[in-house]
Amino acid sequence: MRIWRRLRAWFQLPAGRLLLEQERAQMESILPDLFGYYLLQVGHPGRVDMLSASRIRHSIIMSLEPRARTGGANHVDLFGQADALPFATENLDVIVLPHVLEFSPNPHQVLREVDRTLVPEGHVVVTGFNPWSLWTLWRWIGWRRRNPPWSGHFYSSAKVQDWLGLLGFDILMTRSFVYYPPVQHGALIRRLRLFEHLGRRFQPFWGAVYVLVAKKRVATLTPITPRWRLRGKLLPGGVPEPTVRSNCSVQTMKQYD
Figure 1 (cartoon, one colour):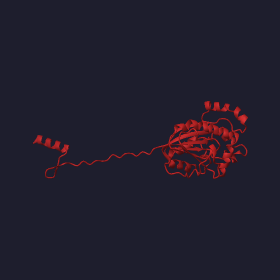
Figure 2 (cartoon, helix red, strand yellow):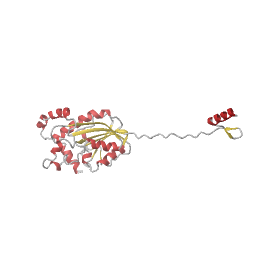
Figure 3 (cartoon, helix red, strand yellow):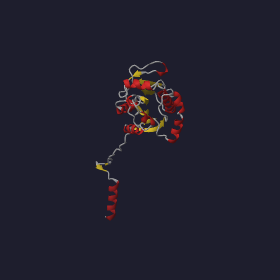
Figure 4 (cartoon, one colour):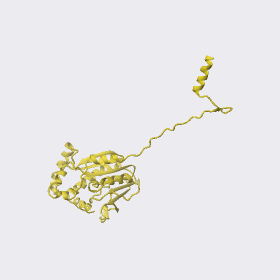
């Protein structure tokens, strides 16, 4: 539980707040196209509302901290564990995982729970840190690798896509963003925003953060064609009626008599 508190504290710093603002912009372009009755956000990394653009009426924020703040626009609805979601099977339409996999001790079980609780054709939206970016180099400087977010296990977008594919998900979209270094000075960050434009244009796969959308595939059953057994009709007296082949044989024999 401590890791989630420390991660949320980092998201309150200038670099973390700017990152959440960019993630909210990504959600504003994704969530309006995802429909259903129930939307779940697993984890509450910061004070930015990332679900406001969704058209789904019933949205739920599940905190991974037992004593997370409640109330206001940044409320949380319940506390739970990402690898044991407190929801019935096939009950949710959309699940958002903001940086959950890299800080969970069992990311495979988290995705299995997503698969269990999503309805057929439901969607999952995943954000994660790219292990092949400038931010990855930053984590090896000094003491940073012992603190969130640098202490997380960064999984590539390709690896997460492979995990979802094994569970029967179709990948609909993946996108990278955040190309500036993770400095903590607001004025310097604004000057480095030029990196964002250049990165999107020349190195679209080297962004520090990625977002992907996957759709739960509907299980289809292969129809088995029944092997019909034709019953011959009975003539008076209980004698079976000859088949077409036997009738042809009888007529041929009569020609040679």
